[in-house]
Figure 1 (cartoon, rainbow, N blue to C red):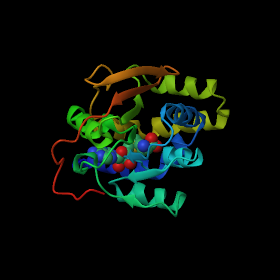
Figure 2 (figure 1 turned 90 degrees about the vertical axis):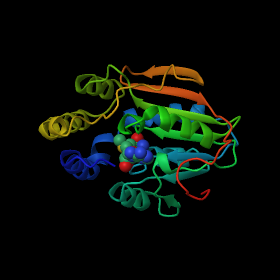
Figure 3 (figure 1 turned 180 degrees about the horizontal axis):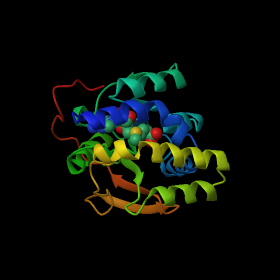
Length: 225
Ligand SMILES: C[S@@+](CC[C@H](N)C(=O)[O-])C[C@H]1O[C@@H](n2cnc3c(N)ncnc32)[C@H](O)[C@@H]1O
């Protein structure tokens, strides 16, 4: 979690508006694509699950999902959305190895961590040999204009597109002061273990990574969860 006061304030506000901005047809489409990529029968860990926009869609698809979300504000909304689901508060950096294989989903998270390379290693080991990591995130060329165009093309009502635009414009000064909504601009595509990478609607990127043996205990002294 960021210690920058502007980032802190930005996320205090953004977390409250998160569903208004992102519970939309683009998320529907991206989540459906993520579901397509998940092999049947494997358990799914979703890290940085936020308010549960992907979680809910994965759950609706009948997947056995376990969720991890370190931010208490986001977690509260997640619990309200999916009351029966156990939610763990671990960040990616605190994940331990667990018996695989499993699918680890990280949607719109990796651009927020300070060391995406280390986070990816963590996720691959969490997935285990024969497991899979599914990364979704903003495409390198994503912009507010492109997002609005993509929303429109996906059939989002005009009101939804305007809301998306106006919230981001209203937050623009704070986003600029906090150094942006991205910490890292590095993409997951092309790193070790990449099996496929695709761009969705010009604004999102989906990357699949193979899992890896969890030879050493990972992270801090967290027990296997
Ligand atoms: C942009 S939101 C995405 C939420 C959700 N995955 C979605 O796509 O709707 C990013 C989420 O990642 C969480 N996050 C930030 N840094 C993290 C880290 N190091 N480990 C795990 N989650 C993290 C934040 O608390 C936030 O809920």
